Image (tube, rainbow, N blue to C red; front, side, top):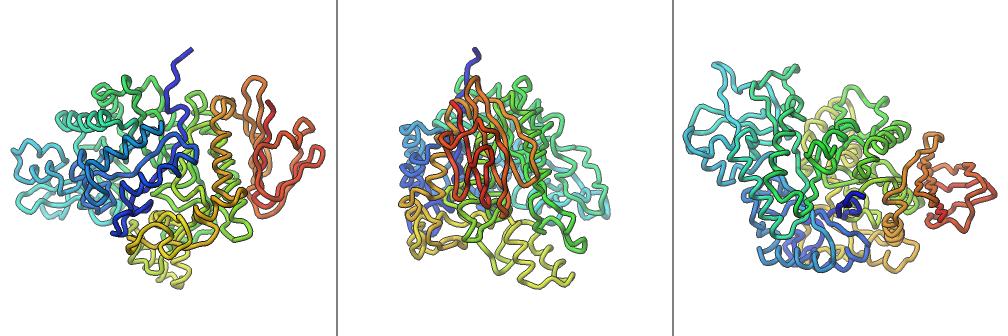
Length: 557
């Protein structure tokens, strides 16, 4: 029997530290805030946490622009605070995944500051440089993800450096062996500190086409021509040999936003020795047929295409099933909260919707990632001023939509369902003035709500929070960890599947609609076999009547 790695049974809780808990009154969450809430995290039943970057940063992109990869940012605490957090998690048997922004650094990183000193500086080749042709303002027509050209000229020289994301975040040159060696040393530093895994941020862009071809559009994203390069496999193979990947059973999760099931399967194939799992943004196909063609589509909201969603989920289950299943998630710091975007946050349906969506996704085969606040049904925050939303493309969308005749309210409704920052509101611990997050002024907008906070839900056995705890306990069982998966063919708004392991069987029935519905499930499923459900469902003979956003989970032992 093959050795089972720890992460094959991982149930991950993602913590966005800025928004989790502030203990020093500066309005920004910190390490001691995480430590303070470890009893709560442990009570959820999760066995792993993923923490977004807390390394020293220029904070132009909330930690993803590193100044020093091995130092804790004083914004979040001291080196001793960081050590204490690791120890406290270890003492509770909780594994730790750190975010590793390996594609770029801050312009304030010492490597880049050295690189600016001239062509002969040993750190020059840690980054990607080239010249522009005469009478051209830039080397080519690539644009950066956050706007403007993907190139910036050094002040005292003739070359330009590449930044696929933004000017303050120059891309690293992974083609340069000394850079790869230093990055491996960074990982080994944190592994020795006790870190169990890493999320490899934007790793699909580390192989840059050094021919720098023109984008076919007049101006086009440089990312389009530089994702999933053929040398990524070589770079990751070398990295895995250089770190204590096998010895320490390090868990590597790659962020590949555009990866379909086939590409995910290639990246995670154990024989390719690249990453263990992939986080992709391709899980949520939308109905875009009713979008306004006169307005940029990237920030237009569209409902979830339930038929296509089921097809995508089925494909990922089939192609990743032999490898333990895919990463399962609804939301994270880079996406709006799905409960609000694709579900129903009307007071009449919010609790049922949150419970149904959780069971639908997380009881499938794979590794759940629960984004902090999801377990209490948090919704997106709502900006009034587009200028306060730092997400890329927001102002362009606002201006184009305004030209097309959209009023301010309509534009903001769309932005508040599509911009990534709307999911980053502070954690709602209670319904006090600052929702139990801070004594200071929170760094970002937040929602203050009764019911949808930890304090209120702890007291209610029927709450979303308690449902999540029961769901996590169920997920830990052998059937939901190792059992086979089969989706049952139904109408688009119903989502039904079986899990099977020897004689053990489970049936998960979900209604992704405000309309009630009925499904015939056969007389082998009885009321006493219901192990998890939300409100309003009823079983009569072989007919299961599902309420609005209803879910019922049957278990036959």
